[in-house]
Image (cartoon, helix red, strand yellow):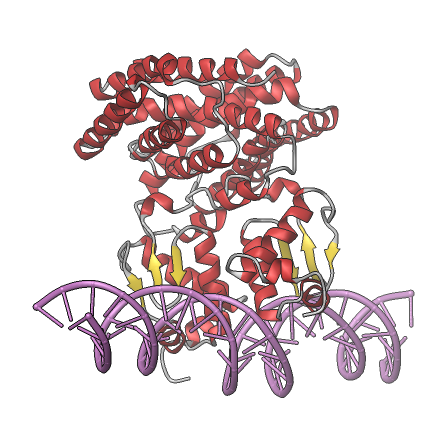
Length: 237
Length: 237
DNA sequence: CCTATTAATAAATCATACAAATTAGCGTGT
DNA sequence: ACACGCTAATTTGTATGATTTATTAATAGG
């Protein structure tokens, strides 16, 4: 059309997701204040240059993430922050650059501190044979990468993500499952292990790995805690 | 129309949510297997007796919860369980009666065990003045209810929910915020504190409360752990 | 036998129309 | 002047059909 809207319509894919992202970022950044009523569907359609169908699907998406709530006649409202689902991977992706990324990573580490040691403990007790085999396989890859002549950062991040995700999946507790994806998203979008070389923390991972394989939940919990302490010490600031 | 579809169309409100719930429960129960392709939009429209608009919004909703993923030409696929967002309140509501509820509550307690002690510790350090005032107010209500002649179960559940939610909101960590809503949902839908009378656990809450107010994070963590141990001992089996 | 083009298909988007819900305001009666 | 109920206007909710795009698969050409 005639605005600066081609930037949205002509982007990558899934129009309603693009629109949702735009609106989400306005909400997350506070540009659309909490409890305020956002413009009506028709206005937003014009503003973004998309059809009502696409816009409505975008609103539905944001509603399911706890950012919006709409009622007939009254309009669509930005709900308060306490209801935003920060544990949604897509929402986390959209946070990029909104708040201070170092602070964001630091807070995420605050979550890992609570979750991961317990997850490791549960995995030590509940991992199935298949999961133990898979973990073994992944750890072997970690060793290979850590011992390689040139350290491949991308590969390391990939297996590191798989390693921690698999642990969440091995807890036997459905509520731990989503953390694997959250961690994957954070690793992919926010955490840039610049100064991290594999050789230093491969030992930490070995501790976690062997404790889980041995079914020693207390040792697994402790090893995970130790690992996270080490990660923390590498954080900026 | 002419099917058994009024049961859906004629229900409460928000057609697409109703449809989403139906499909979600089929997925959660395994009736629609992981990695399988669900029927095309048109077929599903007929099956549920709704328009494509409503159905598509339902699919979008489920996609955002990690249950479905659709691509042109190939169709809409049920993604594997590891990607389902069990930390979504709406999804948790839909779980009712799908799996064994006692087991589900037990697993939830497994999550609380990891999260809450750490949340209490963070709250002790980071709660704002307003949040401390509010917490104080809520705890006073808890005492009133616990000391009343007749124990009002509904009121207790309400303030108990508020108490724990506020702690999550007082951590100063965005990743802890959603747990308040998850807890609220679980309390409202699954946890029926039948044998719980307030007088026994008001002391446990007092320990948590005063530790947070005193800014003693270690004591807060410990008090929360103790409380959860007590809760666990009251679980069935 | 391999590669590139094309055709078929299903979802993605658009446009429009109508329905339902809720609020605000108007009007009437006491 | 006040209370009550009704109407109308606004906004989201649902429906339908047409068009576009993306992906697979088949087909034709090298």
